[in-house]
Length: 336
Image (cartoon, rainbow, N blue to C red; front, side):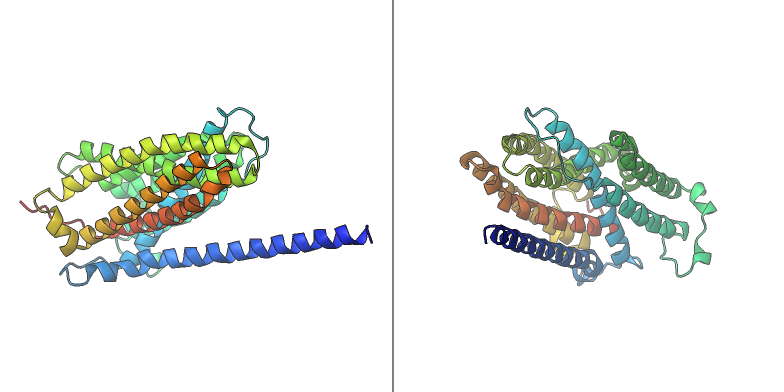
C-alpha cells in the first residue's frame, strides 16, 4: 500500500496538471481569437457616422500590423528581461523557453502580407499575378517593406543561433523602418515625427514584451527569491518606459490633431475614436500596473503580484491590437 498510494497520488497530480495546462491553452487561444476581432471588425465600428471611407482590406491590414507589433514585442522583451536577470544575484540557471523564433516567424508572415499590399499599389491582391515584386524597389514604401521582411528573416536566424542577442540589430532596423514608413518626407517636420515614433515604439515593445517574459521567468523560477528581485527591477524600469510612452504618444497626437480640435476629433473621426479607446486602455493598464507593484511591495511571495500583472498583459495585448487598427485608419485632417 505504501508503494501504490504515492504512485496514485503522483498520477493524480500529473493528471490535474495536464488538465490545468489544457485549460490555460484553451483560454489563451480564446483570448487570441477575441483580440483578432478588434482589427477585423473595428474599422466598420469606428468609421460609422464619420463620413470617412477606409481603403479596401483595412481590417486585414490592421490585423497584420497588430501581428507585426506583437512579433516585435516578444523578442525585444526577452532580450530586455534576460539582461535585467543577469544583474540579479542568485538567479536559477533555468529560464523559460524562448518564443523569439516563433514570433519572428509570425512577424515574417505578417510583413510579407503587408509587402504584397504595397506591391499592388496599396490594394489587397486577389491573385499572385497582381503582385509586382520588382515594383517594391521603385518606391519608398516598397523598399521599407522589403527591409522589414529581411529584418524578420534575419531575426529568426539569429534567434535560432548560438548568439540570440544578435537579433537586437535586425529588430532595431525594423523599428527604424516602421518609424520612417509612418512619417514620409512630405509630412510637416518628418524628422520630429520619426524620432517620436522611434521612441514610442521602442519603449512600448520593451514594456509589453518585458512584462510577458518577466511573468514567464517568474513562473519558471517559482519559489526562488530572485523572482521577486527581477519583477521589482522590471517594475522600476517600466515606470520610466510608461512615462516615455505617454509623453511621446501625447506629442504625436497633438501633431496630428492640434490642441484646439483634438476634443472634437476624438469623437468625430475614426482615428480619434480609436486613439481615445487606446488611451483609456493604457490608463486601465497603468492602474493594473500600480496594483501589481503595490502587491509586490506588500506581499512576501512575488506570485501574489501575478494576478494583476497577468491582467495587465492581457490588456496590453488588446492595446497592441488597437494600435494595429490605429495605423490602418485614415489620418485625420489637420483643422486650423
